[in-house]
Amino acid sequence: MAARTMRAVQYAGYGGGAAALQHVEIQVPSPKKDEVLLRVEAASINPADWRVQKGMMRPFVPSKFPFVPVSDVAGEVVEVGPGVDGFKPGDKVVTWLGFKAGGLAEYVVAPVNIAVHIPPEVSAADAAGLPIPACSALQALRHATTKFDGTGDPANVLITAASGGVGTFAIQLAKLGNLHVTATCGARNMELVRSLGADEVLDYKTPEGKSLKSPSGRKYDIVVHCTSSVGWSSLEPNLAAHGKVVDLNPSPGGFLRSALHQLTCSNKKLVVLIAMVNKEDLQFLVDLVKGGKLRTVIDSRYVLGKAEEAWAKSMEGHATGKIIVERDQVMDI
Figure 1 (tube, rainbow, N blue to C red):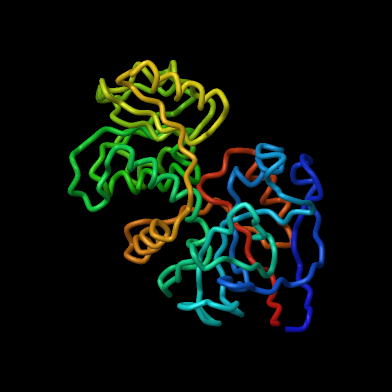
Figure 2: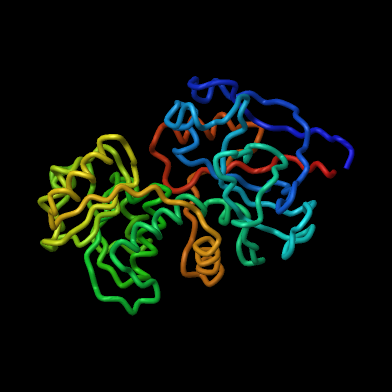
């Protein structure tokens, strides 16, 4: 294929936030062995994207600059590389691009080992919202040995920051797993959180919300912990005797506390989870969306030409569900 150019959004170094994003014209990549070239229809911004920009994983990620961010994408296959079986031009897919990223662009190459077909019942925006947040919620709830067909034993779960990207999926998945859900969020999102299935909702700004106590007096078997603003000292008194906190905000302090809990053989556990997207989980989630059992809550949509506005919105930390960046014009290659 002759060299073509595409529009992309990149940054040239660590820091700078939305103001550091640059709109550029770069070459359309070519798929290599076991890769496909996607026309990106929707990309979903996660906090991990701008945390990488801040230097959270320096010096390993990004591996080089300039860097095109965002790893959760959905789009249409336009070309397949050598050795690709099971995908052809015209297929709609969702995938996680990993640490090489590239999602804020009109085209991106993606490995096929994670890519999943999108059925007609699932939109590109809904699919793009799945990889990191829905897989994180799914894997966190598995720490409670949750069975998502409703056949598991009843248990009590607390989901913090439940109106965010991970939290909105965690509520729905927990209810599929026959769990009693207590959720925290801001006052403006309490009705949404209830509509997703939460049995009890706490306004995190109120004394009751800050205490994290279940209104019905339940102790939590598991906490899906989606915020860094609440510490172990607030969570521990509300745990059941063998309760577990699954922390989705990895930090050096969190790893240390987790290690100490393992060493002291405490019955109450703190687990730091770095979720990894895999094909099996992503297929399971797409099937749930197709079947109407799971939905992506979308906070806002932006065209690629206004990606910096989407980036700034995400960095504010108050999005309800997912922030989606979509194509704003068609370019055929």
